[in-house]
Image 1 (cartoon, rainbow, N blue to C red):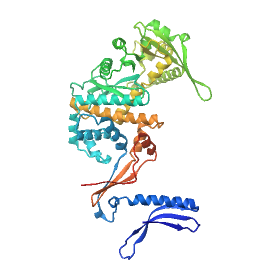
Image 2 (cartoon, rainbow, N blue to C red):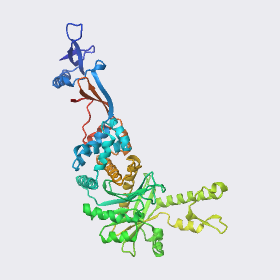
Image 3 (tube, rainbow, N blue to C red):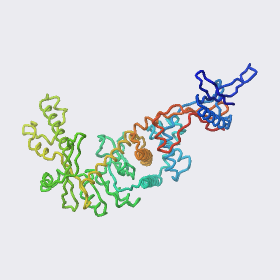
Image 4 (tube, rainbow, N blue to C red):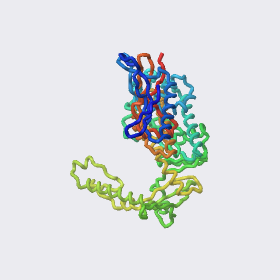
Amino acid sequence: MFIRKKLNKNGSVAVMLLGGERVPGKKHPVSRMIKHFGSASEESQIDALVQEAETYKANFQTIPKAKILRIACDTDLQSCRSYNVGFSDVYGELFADIFSSLALKTHFIRQLQVLTVMRIAAPASKLKTARFCEEYGFDSKVDVLYKLMDQLTPAVIERIKQIIHHYTCQILLENKQSIDVLFYDLTTISFETSTQDEVRNFGFSKDGKHQHVQIMLAVMVTKEGLPIDYEEFPGNCYEGHTLLPVIKKIQQRYQINKAILVADAALMNKVNLQELTASKIHYVIAARIKNTKRDVKQSILDLSTYKNVSSTRDPEGILEDEIKAKRIEMETGDWLIVYHSSRRARKDKWDREKDLQKIKNYLASTGKSKLTSRLKKSYVFLKKDCAIEIDPQKLKQEEAYDGFFGLQTNIKNAIPKELLSSYRGLWQVEQTFRISKSHLKIRPVFHYSPRRIRAHFAVCYMALALVRYREFKLKRNQLFISYEQLHELLDRMRVVKIINSEKQQFELLEGSAPELFSIYQVLGIPWRRKFEHSRHLL
């Protein structure tokens, strides 16, 4: 192996590294170019190219011959297959960092890692997951996955929840943050069956599947969308009765007492609010201002007593939205913060006019179409002859509330602007449910025993945590990439694994998205080499 400097026709000098190769039928070795380092005209540039070639030569000579892949015919190749490595790179190592302390045998932790990463990459039943594993560089069998599910006992699931909460607190602390706001919401998970048990039961389905049994799933997250905890409830449980048990468990597990609880209006009942206040837990809950007493309604509709909170203008200086607020002390001892938004008022008016147009079209339609149409009941009334007419009094009442909305809180000196900002973060828990249902496909659930159903939710919760942690770190480093975009890029990260006749294993980077390089850097993941000798198989 030697370095050659070749004079080009244009006067520049090319620097290349050559090696000798013996060819059958020839007496002397034939020169073969290993690498071309470029051309230059100035002496200093030529010397720099030669120095680069010397360094490359020294490194090249230290590579054992066993790491050189030579395939001349079919007999030199034992196997060759392509698989995705993007998901194992981004989520596999993170799983190992977080959950390696679980009280499970090593091979079960490894299979749990496979199952969790596969829930993110290709969510499916355990049978299909076992089939898809090979496409992502994993090796697993369906009976092993089912055995793993039985290892996720209540004690192990409890430990998983504690680990996730601890990791959430840790990364918040690293970013000089703390858990100061908790967002709580509830959803229903239905089963394609009518069989009832201790967990599955009939109830009000938020997905409209009232004919199927279901489980109620409550989730609590931070304002950044990081997971705190979750709980399952029987499908026939009243939504308002789920809040206090979850809060009490959260307090017992993690000693969270100073955080503000933010929840939707469906959880607002007198018992809950009194219990939260007695437990010295601050809350911000959406208020049903139309259901308040007459004197409170009159105070709500009196805009003259409101104070300006914020205003938004477009680049041309035109006012887009103006928000005003006022505080009303309630008989229960807490406060109602009422807001009026000019943008919301315009939207409420537009929505009402659209509903009215539908009602008018309905009234002018044929008898057959009237049987299948739906009406906005609050805008119409039924006459004695069963004729339907628009109720102008109800319309006037609805119009009076255009732009108004309220929040109920027990924070004594709450600042309306900050309170509104906190409540608007409730979309984080809604997005959590969207990711769980649409991307991680927490439903349909293919298990029937309560033990495995709970294990399935635990695996989905672990997958959700990994997704949220990666999303948080990317955002903190100014990489605003959606869940869908990231996974489209990860789908393109593939390698080809080759095993030659000597049972030596090689990996070639088949394809990757250029945008992934910066993501790998931010996440601290080493970028894969184009060609790598993995190991010698026994």
